[in-house]
Image (cartoon, rainbow, N blue to C red; front, top):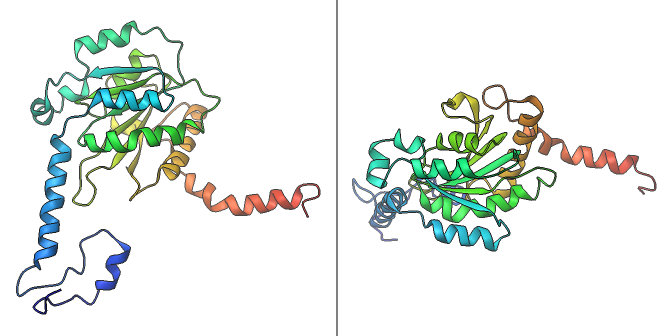
Length: 266
């Protein structure tokens, strides 16, 4: 670092966060290195919003990881420009996709997973399949429908998809609005009894799923908790509270209690 750059006394804290703190100062401005890093992050965030989702590659990835049945749908937004300017078009299916789903012959699945580009195709491409693998391993006794890949999609598109596939619940894995340190963050939205017109108050959200944020295993733990209790209570949204962290806190004590009570434990 040049002698002209004054270091910030909080410099040591930068090792614990991606937040832009303790960047130092060069005169009345930022040093060159953090300024260029900011410009790069801004460019990555813009790219995440405008980059198209490679649906074919995502279907291939899903098939390679054992998700044999997949469906491809598109919202009523014909392209990215319309998607960004007309959020309402991203919340409903195009006529062709609606027909495809209406003709799908399925027994009523417990849950349908939808992978959607949202505002970051990077997130859908990088995080969705590992997240599906993590949660799928916890749903051995569940009837899981086909994985649906949705382009130019908003969160509410999952409601119409779930309704047409007669799913008890729908889980949207969707690219979140990029931040300056997280262009590939995945959001998860769970809705019980999905149908067109559901409000945000009727769903639960898990945010910032990525290796640098909430890990796939931690997100799968939360999602499994919400799915299990949504099925038991028959609802999602404001009536379903995420208390999954309590289970994690109690896990060591519960395990010790079970070990102590088991025959020949010692």
